Length: 198
Image (cartoon, rainbow, N blue to C red; front, side):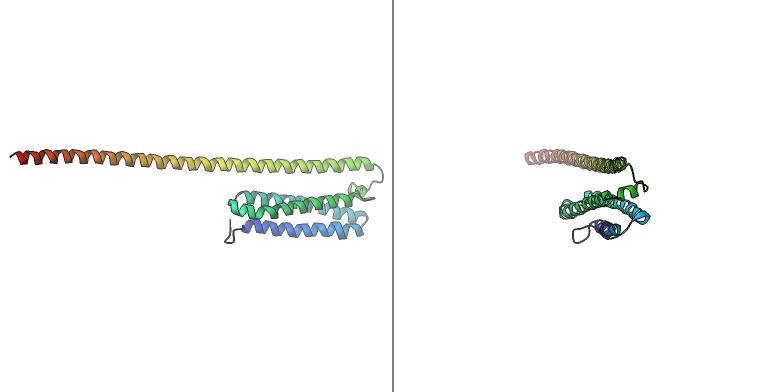
């Protein structure tokens, strides 16, 4: 819902949630993970991945809310959404670099020392799967928005047709009234001419 300042309280709430979770992710990637090793490091990396997925969902909600806002408000908030998306992409790259550092990928995949190429392939496949799911969710949201817009357009069209029908009936009624008035005028003129002859 748009507020008096031309923004959206719901969008603001999502944006605050995103900022909080992005700070938590950045702290893990930049400060916590580099100082850890073994199981604690692996646990922190997994927690950061879960938070990235949650941040993705929040960005999706921000996009959905933006579509529901008036055009002027949408223009004002679009740059903030793009900034959040760019920030999220950077966090994903930073985490991937942290995982790719010596030993991290082995820890993430269960502590194996060998098979780095297989682990990298599995990690890339997981990233592609997440990316594909995000694109599918985005396409679904766009389809839902298009369907909602079509329904709204149909409702407006039905309303316009109803108004036109009512106006047509009013015009017909007015025309009938004028015809009736003309007949009265004709009768009056005939009566006056008859009286004048007498």
